[in-house]
Length: 109
Image 1 (cartoon, rainbow, N blue to C red):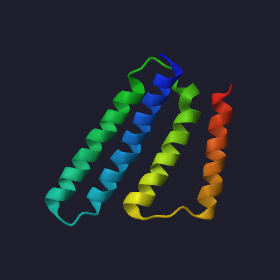
Image 2: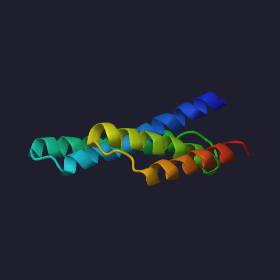
Image 3: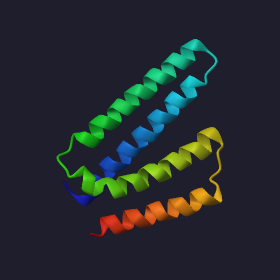
């Protein structure tokens, strides 16, 4: 599997994990029962898709975990800002910078 394809799989997996979690979160706080059920079940299905995407390829996921965590952090913060209007604090910016730096270090080994 080429490096670009691997990165694409990790990006899709991170989108599914953060997006599925966001769907479940909005479902838990929805006022309408139908909306609540649709969002929670939809989030569960997206999280299942995450599990399939991240575990289907024959790769050393432990080795790629640093890159994955960077993708997950960035996507989760974007979703948090756009969907939930939660702006990152200075501590999140610093911690996020460390996460990105760690991902770079791990990917260069």
